[in-house]
Length: 137
Image (cartoon, rainbow, N blue to C red; front, top):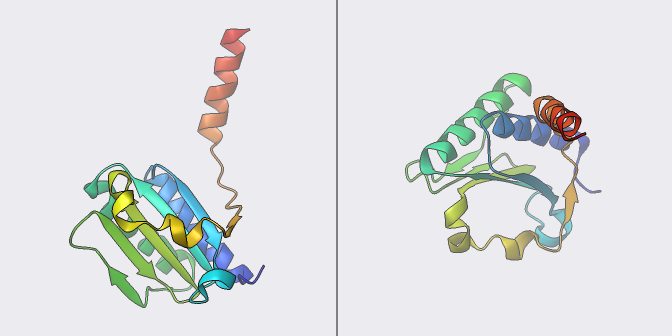
């Protein structure tokens, strides 16, 4: 995979931050071959404008503190709340309002790209599922 390991690790930090703020879905793609502008594109969904901004803020904070002061070289969409695009050079993070997806049509950019396993853990969900299974038995 053309994506560099340190980029993947940084995207995992970003994904964990988005997950902590309860992003509705999180997926990352290796887009180096198709787009040629970056290695990885991570998409995080949010259920409303306030959550879009909160997810983007949490991602920026974690990447700065947990990845040696990484800062986005450009930031777009921070005033609207419908979407935020953070360009870190070797990866791009797009946080968007779930209902606004059709306006940005990003699917055409990543639909043929290989996805990256972000290895997010959900111990509380797993424990809850196990308890539900125990009750069902």
